Image (cartoon, rainbow, N blue to C red; front, side, top):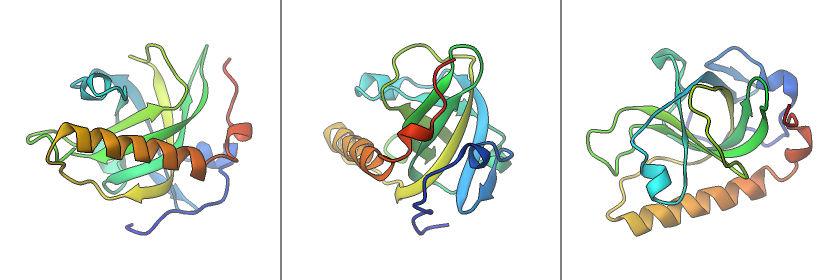
Length: 158
């Protein structure tokens, strides 16, 4: 899928589709947060690396979506999500990485449900880190704008 995904607000029922399925043009993946290369943190944009079944991962790209942190103390967050092998860093493996807007804390070992709502752009290799940081900043800003109406529907922290 290379065109932007649907623009309608996501509902709780759509957020709970089986992992790796597309519901009304939305991909939903779930998995456990594992340690990554910590590049996002070093660049000022920490991400949760979600361990998923390879066959359940949607097409490569950068997406605006939501993340539900499952279990006690969990809740819902808007997220900028990268799916793919991160071509700026040769040899990187294919991952699902989510930057949760407004979240600070430790998610290692927690289960996340990631819903991809809008494809923002294709992955690309950047010539330098400042250009990558600028692109990530733009992705986060676009996520906030595109999903401004979704906040009210996200689950509250438990």
